[in-house]
Each structure stands twice: as structure tokens, then as C-alpha cells.
Length: 363
Image (cartoon, rainbow, N blue to C red):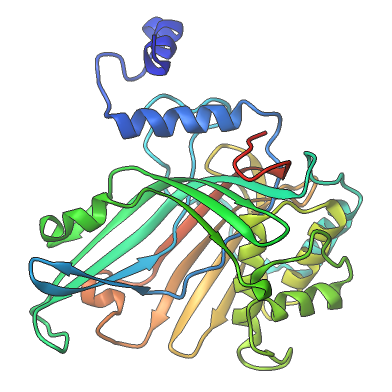
């Protein structure tokens, strides 16, 4: 008996999808989430390096030159074992009123986090499980320069991620993709790109991209460690510092466990962002109670808003997303693909993070 048949047998007449079917990829996604969420309360944190908006690769589409552009996005399912076949939720919303200054509240959560436990698990390999979506954008053109007549497609692709990183920089990432949702444009012309997103990838990171097993716990030292990650000497007071910091913070939350005092240091760094706001209480996509904080980062050619849902008792990072608020017109800009700003580019829900003995091990 497979997982879906067994689950339907348990649910009997209460199954909200009784009589309906789902494809193999949908079953796999439901099964992966159920296994991940059967663990004890999900631990917080972890982060993958944010891809620059509309950074991508090149390929061929029907003898034309195709520029494939990727933007991150993440989300999850309901609390406990996910309802079978449930579609990934929309980015979280907040019922509160006008956002208020958030630094003091972040510092209070940092104090709570500092008194928290170490990340769970044994070993020296970081393991992070998360779920969400990515906005995938494709442009294909026949000439040497893009034009208004080029074919353009876009689709939100749901993912489940499993990520491991060893102390020497060895990594493995399993991306299990579902079918593209909310597609638009010349979708059928780019179907092979929109449908072929799953992968099991292993690599070795450059030493500049490998954080130490133990991160600093002081605010200034954590900030400098984040600025040094994969960067070429970004001065702390430079215009590029905020973008570099949020990029590194997201990588930390996406890709490695954090002890309580390490988490506290990252929250104090976040509290130091100019104009950081507290947007109110909310729930993450798997119904965990949290508090929402947001910060805007101006990169010159675009302005992004980053939002983080933190556990109100422990400061644990439960969720994050990024929304493009404004951008300069360009051939690769989202308005060329039919989007009206603001557009939520990515959202990710963290299910579990901890330490395991070997790359590929699961808790």
C-alpha cells in the first residue's frame, strides 16, 4: 500500500480530496513534507545565498538563444502532517496595522534566543530541510539583441529542499520540484525549462563560502563574518554593505543550524539595519505563530523588501521572503514579463535544521 492510499484509509470520509487524484510529483511532495514534519518541533534558521534578481543561465529553445533567469521563492504546507495534495500556500499576510520601528523588539528576541538551546543533532555536517517556491522566468530571442517580440514565460515552481554541507565545503542539495503554478506568457514554448527543475547536486564550495563550525556570537564579529562571506572586502560603511549582509544572512538561515547565541548575534545584526520594522503577529505557512519583521534594501538598480517570521518565544527563524518593490527598466526586468510591481520573488519555510554525521544523512 502506498503512502497516499494509506493516508486515505486513515482519513476515510474526512478526506477533503476524496475521489480526486494527483500525480507522482504531488505524492512525493506530500510524502516529503509529512516525513519532515513528523519530527519534533522544527528548529529554526538556515539560509541559501540569495541569487541576484534575474540572474541566470543560457540554453536553446527551438533554435533560438534562450536566457533562463531564476528568482528565489519559498512556502510550505499546513501544521502537523500536511493535508494530502494541498497546494503550497501564498506568501504570509499580517493582520496588524501600520508597521512600527522593529529594532527594540528584535533585540528583545535576540536576548531570548541567547538563552536558548544548541542546534539539535550530532556530527559536523549541517542539514537543513525547507519548502517553498521560486519564480522562474525565461526569455528566448532569435537575434543577437533582445527585442519586444521575444518570447517570455514565467511560472512559480514549488520546491522541497534538502541541503547538506560538510566542514570541508562538500555540499549536496536535493531540489524536488512540483509543476509550475500561475504560469504566463509563451509557456508552452518554454515548457522544458519550466518542467525540468528537479536535481540532486553535489559540489565542493570555495573556502570563502564555507562558514566555520562555530560562528561568532558578538554582534560586531558576526556582522564582519557575514560581510566577509564570499565577498571582496566590503567595507562595513559602504553602500553595498546592507545588500551583502542580507545576502549572507539568508545563506546562513537557509543552509546551516544555529546555536542560541549564534542566532542571537544574527538577530542583533538584523536589528542594526536602517529602518527595520515590526509588521505585527502572524502565522507562517505551516501555522506556527510568529512575529514579522521587514527591511528594505536599495541596491541602486532595484529595491527589495525582505521579511522574516520569528518565533515569539525563541527568536527562531521560521520563514522568509523577498519582494521586488522597484527596479530600473531593462530587457530582463519583470515588467517585460507582464508583472506589475511589487512582486514577491521568493518565500521559504524552514522545517528542520541540525547536525548529522554524514552528507546525505537525515535526522
